[in-house]
Image (tube, rainbow, N blue to C red; front, top):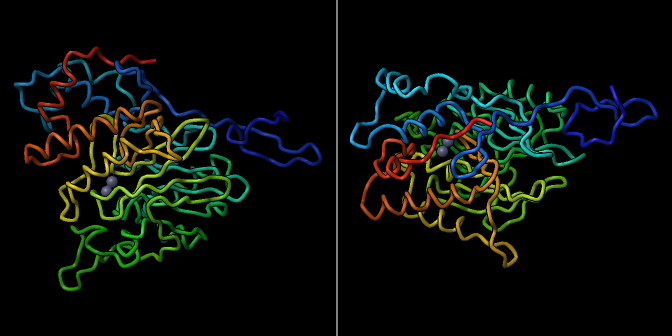
Length: 356
Ligand SMILES: [Zn+2]
Ligand SMILES: [Zn+2]
């Protein structure tokens, strides 16, 4: 044990008499982080890494494999061994005040932001079933569950917002863009249209949760010692929003399902998605300015999959290019791009990502 003025993210703080803060047990930084051929530092989950590597190796004339065929293809190209773990290990420190505290079986990601002595904020708490695990991870980061004073949703979908009510019962204030607020309060078809009861039109299993902070575009959301810029990015849902936070001198983009790593997109197959709006929202992010200065996105902290530790502007640009191309051709927008010939041609010829 040592007495130190180290930033408190490094250690679980314990108050010891007049000595002040003492610290023990380090929390690891996010890992493994690989360097891609684009020079981007990326924390990969296995699905994203394997799909991306296979897209580079599989001949464009071959159909994208599914099920058993996928296992065979991964083996054939030596991608079954040495791949990153299935999920990014959690909890993990992403910056000095942002942590990964949740990642469920379909790769939904939950983040915690240290907002100083006033408490912590959770971004997208995902399913109710993840609640206890998320709390345990918050505590492993050195903060108590009682310090969770805010939950911010990137949008209302069940896989991002279902646990809101449990966190509110714990004392947190719940924030979401005003256009998605009713969906969380009432549990509507927008929340999870596939779970809707035909007789009532409501989602039976979605815990209705009052919204305390209805956000609007351009608003500065002040939570403790942090300021989040609210960027309304409709398209995936009517009230989808992204958040800009400065951390360690970097522009962090909390992007929900609006921007995902390396051309992956939100699921636009739901009946409340609007592809035109989605395109405009991606343009808005790509050209985003704050105080008359263009914002260059550094960290991409999305709702699913891999995390880009730098050069997040690449991912915004790729999503914009892909959606623009597909819409111009009147084609459907797939949430995972790997089977698209454009994606595979674009990737073809790149050297494999190197393990650091
Ligand atoms: Zn969604
Ligand atoms: Zn999602």
